[in-house]
Image: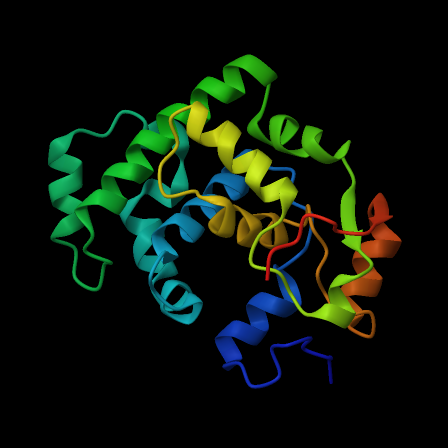
Length: 202
């Protein structure tokens, strides 16, 4: 039985996400875009709702192929809006399309979005040593910095709180509890840096 960090009472769907995806370092741009857009779509909703609708969103957004999405038109927005079971937020759907175009611009400049994002931490997962005792912050100096850079580049629905969740999800921040097998596996298999989080906001 795995330790589920603060996920003890989570559903089976949430636990599978925790055990096999949350916090595992992502270095593939398609996966990174999917994770980032799931966070954008989640704003105002529970994470479990997003996970339940994940396959619908994959179908709507060409499996989160950001190149294809960047060419979407208003007709595609209408198609997605009319998809049964989809999160029907026109602004969020339009944001995904716009974000795909911004994502492409970053890949053109940096070679990949992953290279851009991981450069904020010198390509290492961060373990904040003070998070376990004081609880989990909603954002910190790193997420504020990344969110500001993304906003400057035209991204939508990606404020500091949402970006913090993304940094946890894609493994740039390892916020698994120390006794969680996921934490131990990530630390053993990936470059890690340990530091205190003086910019944490709770």
